[in-house]
Structures are given as C-alpha cells and as structure tokens.
Length: 448
Image (cartoon, rainbow, N blue to C red; front, side):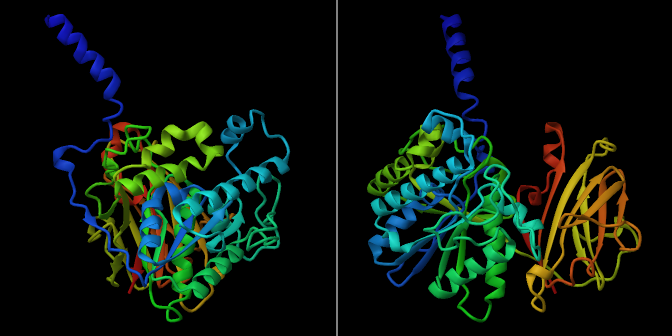
C-alpha cells in the first residue's frame, strides 16, 4: 500500500510539477484590482503587434466594449508573415520564396477580419499597417534618418507589400511607423489604448509599446491623454497549464509579482470566454501548430499591467559609486546606472542596456538610440548601428565586487526629457535573484 502511495505521488510530481513551476506561492500573492469599467462613450484602440494578439490578449475587452456600445478600432503593426513553423504546419511545405511569406500575411489578415467580425468589430474598424514581422524593434533602434530602410531577411522586402494596408509601399523606417501610428491616434482620439507589454518576450510586442510612448509624447497637448493598458502574451513557462481551461483564472507569471508592476484584470462572462475561444480558433494558420498555447489564454479573466514611471530629480554628482543614493541617479550633466551583481561573478558578468532618449525640443528621429554592452570592466557603446569611440565621449564604467556603475553624459543621450530604458544582465540560473525588475522590460524614466 505504501509503495502504491509513493508511486502515485511520484507520478503526480512528474506530470504536474512542470505545470506548477510558475504558480505563485502564498507569499507571492498580489492583489489584482479590477480594470476600469467599459463605458458607452469610450473610444477604445487595440494595438496588436500581429493578427491574433488582439484576440489572445483582449477578446473579452473587445466583446464587452461592443456590448456596451463603445467604439472599437484595432490596429495591427505587422501582418505576422514571419512565422515559418506555422506556415510549414499549416501548408505542409517549407516556404522558399518571399511571395509565400506575403501570402501568409494575407492569410492572417483575413483570419483577423473573421475573428473580429465574430466579436462584433466591423472590417472598416481594422487597420493593418503591414510592417515587417520580427523586424520592428530593429527598426526602432537602428533605422531612422536613413536612405536604406530595414530589409526583412526572410522576404528581402524593405517596404510594406500589402496593397490593402494603410501603409502600402511605406519604407521600413522608424519615421514611417511613428507617422502612421500618430495618424491613427490623432484621427480617432481614443481615451483607452490597449497595447502589448514592455516586458513581453517578443520583440515586436516591445516595439509597439515603445512606438506608442513616442507617439503619445509627440501628440501631447493635441489630444486628451488616453489611459494605456498593456497586455502580456509571451513569457517563458506561462500560462500554465496549456490548452483550453475556461474554468481557471489567468494569474500573472511568478517573476512579475511584487516588482513595481500594478496588475489589473477584466473578468469574462461564460459567454465572453466562449466567444474568445471561437475568435482564437479563427486563426487556423496559427492554431495548427500552437493551439495548445493560444487557447491557454481563454480563461476567466484578462490581465493588464505596466511599470510605474520613475521620476528622477537632479542630484550632485556622487563622490564614488558607493555613494549612489539609488540604482538610477541624474546629475546636471549625466545619467548614472548601478547594476547589482553577485560578488563571485567577474569575467562572466555581461550586460546589455538600451537607453532611448526623448526630447520635446527635437524630433525623435534625430535623438540618439544608445545601446551599451559590458563584459566585466570593458564596454562598447553604439548609437543605432554605429560603434562610438570610447575616448572623449565621457562614458565611464566602474566595476566593484557588488555592482557595475555606468555613467552616461546627458549630451550623448540628446539632453532628454525622459528616457525609455532597459537593461539585461546575463546571469546563470543560480543568480536569477539578482535580476532587477528592469531586466524584464522597458521602463520610462522622467528626468526633471
């Protein structure tokens, strides 16, 4: 009998322990408040990096908005034409020609029309931009003020190829995407915007959030400031269990609890869960290979969250790195970043930091797009794709047993009013506890 009990326990552990790996413990539980209710006079804009993201992340919100008589538009950044695995499973052949990827983008556009019609959104309220799937973050950080637009390595295309799209023939540049997004927002004037999360694991999801932040800053004073609700889609090991579980709540990933992210939820009715289920199934090109994952989002609630902005006032320059009053300090002429580290890590300590400055006095296209890579006590700094010379630019790095401190002159950041900032230390699993919340995504830092 004892052997049977032991075997049963081992079987349960082997089957279910992977599913529970990201389940929060009692001490991790965080209060999740209800999202602001949808009102009849709301103008809601859903920003989806790819066709299907709007259904996975916001189908319940969309259904509720239509039921309340609110206005809803959905804007798609890409047509999702870069998913080779989905194409292989869906069409049962390996794509070899660029036209086949464009064809997949057309398929996904038609699937989006069908899915949104099921939720009550008319095709005239769907806006497809058609920028390169898996290329928009590279555009954001590298392709501004250039005569050579980004070229997709799969399609070998450098401009929007879809004739039905708003942005047909627009070059793959940051100015094109920003201009289109501003045009959509300015003409529609939404009071609520749902957008992909700044900590999402997919680069297109990060970039749509970043483009939105720049667009809203550019439009400040021209439109009432909308509320922004980011939704998370890609996070390793989440949500669990996989497959369709309408009886379960979604729940935030464990690593996103208690780290300055304020979570909100929208509770779905049984009818809305079923509508969401049907909408996701409209994406046959994706569910053919990933139904187990996509349907895992069809649950009793939808989650939304964002990092709280960090506000920094000017302080005198510290006498030493040990005198820093916080992990981020702004002085009259510099921005300082302290990255904590395990003492035992030296040569293996590697970080990558993005610093995108925004100024109200100059177009964002003209602002530096800074990336810094550090390895132990050495660093390289890039502005877009250009490697900057270390001498004479005022950038410095100090390496101590406990931390690394980067000093960036505000001049090389373009004298910004705020920055969009992300850092990623590359650590082993044993050192994951040292990861700061910024390692999960982009933060907005206001410089006063």
